Amino acid sequence: MGKHDQNDQLVKLSDIKETIKLGDLDIRGYVVKDKEGEVIGKVEDLLIDQSENTVRFLLVESGGFLGMGVSKSFIPVDAIARIAKEEVHIDQTRERVAGAPPYDPELVGTRSYHQDAFDYYGYTPYWMGGYSVPGIPFQF
Image 1 (tube, rainbow, N blue to C red):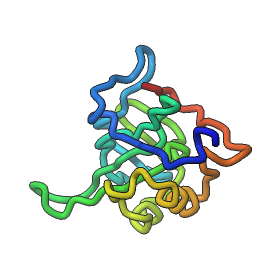
Image 2 (image 1 turned 180 degrees about the horizontal axis):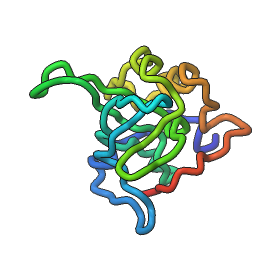
Image 3 (image 1 turned 90 degrees about the vertical axis):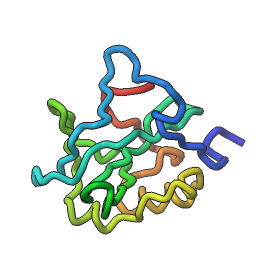
């Protein structure tokens, strides 16, 4: 059984007290913009695959006022088109992100939950043959 034949234990970068490697970007707190340049929210955290030391998903927080009405999106890092000064641009629309499977911390370690997110956004899951690591500039 290979590394990716089991459930993935993704954890928040903030929960494991790790940091991004020197020379790589820590995009937590960056504004997330869709492919039209519309603001979606901010990167609250990064979900890490500890077995591979790789960032797999962005946890994006949007909306709300004083903690009310906040929503969280679970977006594969494969969606990142580019990273600019304190901005993460993704190749999806704001409406597409709004209709995505919601972030559920109880399900974050299950393969079917990850599969749903990859299927929804149209990316090949990282455990499938032919997957290539996105050329984004960060690892932990």
